[in-house]
Image 1 (cartoon, rainbow, N blue to C red):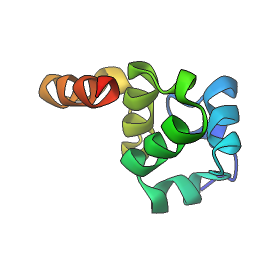
Image 2: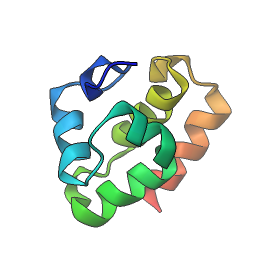
Image 3: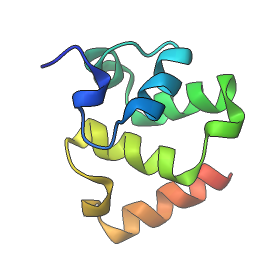
Image 4: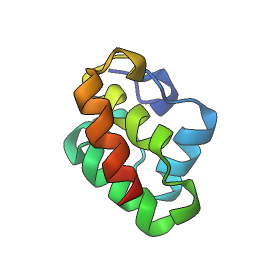
Length: 84
């Protein structure tokens, strides 16, 4: 596995920067932490950046798929979580 967050699906320069600012520094760290905990860290440290797309992107990244490929019911639950 690469050491660059940007090598994960859905993780571009902006989201990688948000993850690093929240203390998530590598793909391995993100995988250990999990997408829900990583989103909570972003929400805590950078609340203005904790949006639905961030939540979907993180879930797809830890599953190694584009977020568009996530099941519709899962996407709906994640959207609700992002707005909670």
